[in-house]
Structure formats: C-alpha cells, structure tokens
Image (cartoon, rainbow, N blue to C red; front, side):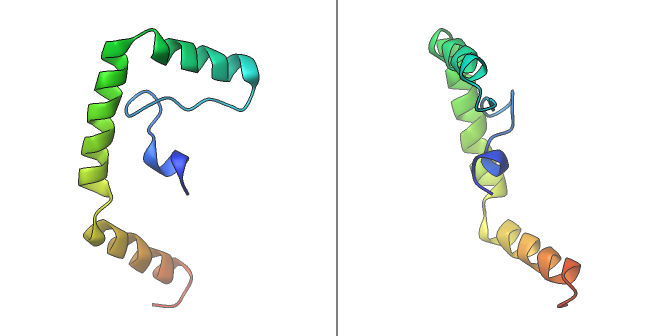
Length: 71
C-alpha cells in the first residue's frame, strides 16, 4: 500500500528507486518543471476523487475477502 497505490508513475507523479542518482534525477525533473508539477497535482487530485472513495474501498475489500476464500 501507500505511495505505489497512490502515485501512477508518469501520470500522477514520479516513482523512483531508492538509489540516490535516480531519486535525484526524478527530484530535479520535478523542481525544474512547474507545468509538470501542476499536471501531476491535478491528475493526482482527480485520481483521489475517482479512486479513493468508500464505494471503491468496499469493492476492493470485498474482492480481497473473496480471494481469501471468506466470501
């Protein structure tokens, strides 16, 4: 869970491996590009509004119960 569920690489943000040069490159890309940050921010907000709802959470929970054989 967490970041990898919330951030879609190249759509709502950037995911970088925990390797200093790769992380630094991703951070530099964001810091030097205001329109990119704005686009990621808007896309991230829309992702939250679309995906992180009680209905979607219930559906994911129900699927997890089914996959585990409890439903």
